[in-house]
Every structure is written in C-alpha cells, then in structure tokens.
Length: 265
Image (cartoon, rainbow, N blue to C red; front, side, top):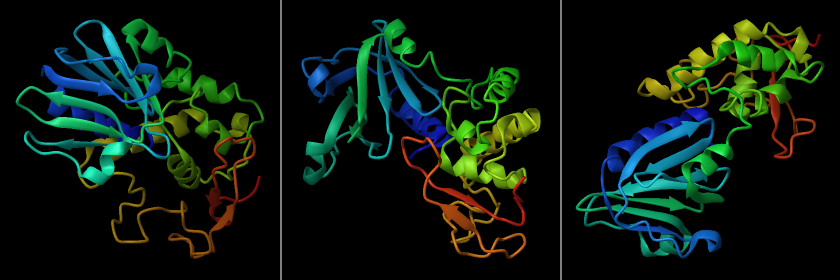
C-alpha cells in the first residue's frame, strides 16, 4: 500500500502538471459522480494528508482520492494518451487546456464535493509528519494514549499519525530497537516521532531516497527487515522473522523483526 511519502511525491508531480491550468476535460468515471463535468474549472492546488490526496478547484470544490492497494496516477504530455487496454480502468481524467492529462487508474476511493465536505472526510486523521506545521507533541500524546496496544499496531493507525504504513512501521521499530509488540506506553514516543518525521521527510524530498531505509540502494539491501523474512539481518546476521498479520489489522499486514536487534520485552 502506498504510504504518506509516496503520496506526497505524487502530489508534487500532479502539482507541476496541473496547478494553475484550466481543464478542457474533467471526468470522474465512478457511479457516484459519473454526471460531473469538471471542464472549465481551474486547478488551484494539490494537497495531501497522510495517504489522502486532495485536488482543489477554483469553485470551492475538491476531489478526494486514495490509492489503497490498487490505485495509481499517470501523467501524459499534450497530444498523448494512455494505452487502449488501460482506458477501462480510468476512474479520473483531468486534461489541461493545451497541456498534459492526468489519469487516475483503478482508484478505489473517488469523492467529489464542496471543499469543507471533503476536508471533513479526513478530519479524523492524526497529524501528518510531512506537513510544514506537523504537530509532533500531538503525535507523541496520541501514541501514549494507546496504552498497552502494540507499537506496531499504533504506528499503522492513521488516527494516531497519518502517513506511515507497513513499511515504515516495521522499519521504525527496527531502527529504534523495539520489539513490535512492545506496549505503546513503554515506548519513548518523542524519540520515535522525531525519527519518523526525519525519515519520512528524507524519503519524500531527497532524490533516490524514496523508502530506502538503510541508505543502501542495492537490490535486497534497501530495507532492514520489511520483506526480508528468513534473510540475515543486515546489522547482526540473525535470521529475520515474520508473522502473517498485525493483530486487529483489517488489512492483514505482516510484521517483520530481528529477534536479536529487537528483543522481546
């Protein structure tokens, strides 16, 4: 599943392509909004909050989308189009006058309406580490409020902190030497949040650093534990372990850890 840093970079790409342009075509190819015609609107801004993308228009309306597991966006320059075989999968098409076209493909979430209503859809989310006004104190308090909940589950809860997904949750636990099932109240939340903010911001803003948590871009060495079940820990050589899913996680995501670097507590 795309995480906050990937959506942040996606927004920057769409911003460069569409912000400030008028649309010659704008269609939302989903049942709830099939009759909407965005042609003539001007794209004002692209915003993100965690994994959520918001596209603002000049008539105080906003498009809210989420990639989840299946979605993606592609941008093609003026005069070009996407392959015929992909067109049935298009859910959003935004074509700038004399400019590029952005296609939202297989997007599982497409909402459109007045901007305050779209903002309300994300009001339940926790603070976003990639926002310029990230409220780190609130993030720390949110972690502490989770009580005995395992820190791996806390880090995946978008109501606690918006943005980190399974990759960042697992890698952060390794980097802080945390057994993934450590109770949230037993974690130094301030240090964990500071590392999360620094790591995700580095990933989103430094060329070539996207989700490279080890600093090593060689194949098979970009992550400390995520996706490395049965392989030797890059720090100590111990075999990386994995369990099938995070307890209570509706997306049934896996947890990886090094038993030596992240001892049970």
